[in-house]
Amino acid sequence: MKPSPRLILLALCAAPLLPAAEKAVAPKAVPYAQILGPIRLYDGDAPGALGQRPQDIPTLTPFPADAARKTGASILIFPGGGYGGLAEHEGTGYAEWFAARGITAYVLKYRLGSAGYRHPVMLNDAARALRMVRAFAKRDGLDPAKVGVIGSSAGGHLASTLVTHFTPGKPDAADRVERESSRPDLGILCYPVISLLEFAHSGSRRNLLGDNPDPELVRKLSSELQVTKETPPCFVWHTVEDKGVPVENALLFASALRRNGVPFSLHVYEKGAHGLGFGRPEKPAPPWGSQLEHWLKERGF
Image (cartoon, rainbow, N blue to C red):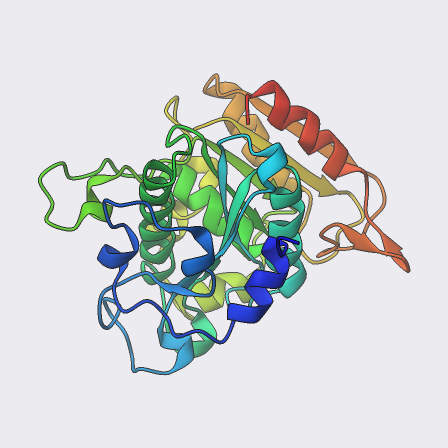
């Protein structure tokens, strides 16, 4: 019997990290079973690294799509945690959901404020990861024009920052990963931190920017102020009951998408605490998963 992708992942989770992202994007296709386990984003030390601790090494962990349902799409996942931690249920939990629906998923371990990092390190890790996922899609016969991002809470802020601050690739770059665009083809924002102004989550802002950030930088990283007509389509959900991140964050972002003519799907539920993800028996989540699945089908993902 052929082992499931999940069993293969468990068997290989202790495998050493690939020494170089360039090797991970070799011209010859590499079976997923050979790359499962964390993949380093950078060859050698990451730019701006403060050491060689695990928290100084950003990585991607792949979750192959169910072969029988493979859609050709890929998703890059940014777990939440206030830029101070990474929530497992918003990382691996999401990845398994997408993989079961035919979408190849990657969970990003990005560097955090709790480890001494500040902007733009988090955005740089996110952009590098998106370029890698697009390069992997080309290598593995997937669609490089169907690469989305999903983030929750502070991970939602990181996703909203990437969908508003992407850059084109450098066609002549020696590093093939850097030849790819960092623009996601869609964004999924779950109870996201969006604004760093009136409705900011103070802990996320502090971990991202420090105690006394430049007011202009605060505005630059308030994503409701950075939406343009080039921002990709977005699915946004939040709850009115959320006491961690006010629902105004989602409403402000959706309003900005509307003003700029960007397609979006907004879902605001009355009930639900912050950080639910897909929920658990004692704390069920709203039905955002089924509505997201419908939206992804509408968008050809």
